[in-house]
Structure formats: C-alpha cells, structure tokens
Length: 266
Image (cartoon, rainbow, N blue to C red; front, side, top):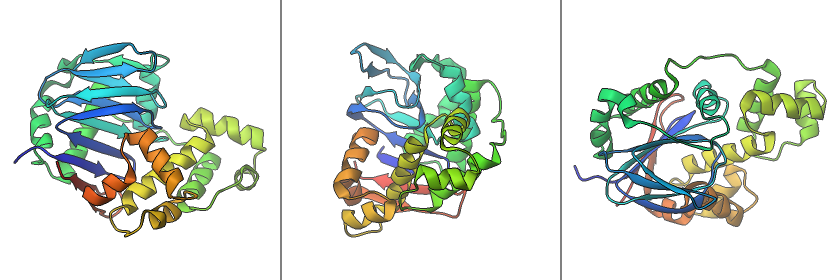
C-alpha cells in the first residue's frame, strides 16, 4: 500500500503518520514524540533557529518548532495533557524543550514503523504501538496516578461544556479559591486552565471537522468563538488550515477509548 497521511485519534492521544511534511512554526499543548519511519533523519528547528537532524526526538509542550521530513516518513505521537504518559514524558524532558533520542532505544518496534506508514496496522495495533513507544522513552509502564478529585471535576467540566467556563465558576465547582485552583491545576496537569480548555476545543473540532458541511458549525460546536479563531489555532497547532483538513480527511470515531481513524489523501 502506498504511504499516505493518516491521523489516528483517541481520547487521550493522537498519532499523525505522514510520508513527508514541511511545517512552519508550530507549538501545541501535547508532549510530542517524533520518529523517522524508515531511519532517514529529519530536520527539527527550534524558535532560536538552531536545528538538528535526527531520527527520534521528544518535544515538550508549548515549544515552537519547525519540522522538515523529506520523503522518509514520520510518526508523530502526541499525548494529551493530564494523562500519566504526558506527565511522565514532560518530567523526562524537563527544561530542555527538545530532546534528541537514540532511535535504537525503540528496538524491534522500529519494524512496525513502515507498516504504520503504509496503513497496514489496525487501530488496536497502533494503540499498542503508541503505548510501547512511551514505555521505551520513560523506561517503564504508564503509572496511572490519580489526580486530585477537585482537579478532575474541573477537567470534566471543561471537556463536557463547549461554552466558556469562568474561573469563578470552576473555582466554585472545585470548592477552592481562584488562586489555589489555578496553582493546583497547573501543578497536577502541567498546563494552565486556559491552555487545557483550548486543547479541548482543538480535540473536539478535529473529531467534528469531517462530519459538518461548514467550518463555522465546526468552530461553534467545538467551542471556538468563530471559524477565524479555529483557523488560527489549527495553524499554530498543526501547521494546517481546517479548510484543508475538512476537504481531505475521513474520520471514523469509535466508542470511548477506541480509535478514531482518519486518512488524508496524499
């Protein structure tokens, strides 16, 4: 099967697989693991203009970078904030921003990169691959440490409501002062409340974008104020306009904790 662009979307992570990409400056709320599909180095450039050529790298949340993958194929695994895997990867990378990894640490998993690029792995196999990739970086299985229940309530409110949630309302829900909630949320989740809410809008919009005829509907149902706001956010997160995604992406959403699989025409 010829390689093509694919987006595999789960509740807590997404895997973007592409034969090549030349992105502008992007930054997102996820911790991102970048892997060459065929062992050909890709170029990764930071905000300061310093670039590296590597086969594997870990990028911390909100770190701007440019990416050039010329025909070698790329797997980009993005972990949603507040998941154990996200926190483990964010802890590992610390203040470095971009951490170049030795591709040999992934061992025989590298044999699955080309089949993933060719679209030969099903959703269950891809999910297992994602889990094993994280374990190779962190050195152990994901630790499902419980978050503070007050933070969990706030996260649930942000996930389930598309309309803006004021800090005062969220603080009342958590039975905490606004300052205390702001500090506790950032400490436990690794993101501010505002950034987490924005990621939720992006996540909802990606899932909705192929099923709605108008981008305005996607934006409003996803929680954005308008299509322009959604477009700016998509550009900064993915280096892609939602109009491109809506024309060329086919998303199939499965039950919770299942995979939503999207194929983007090459």
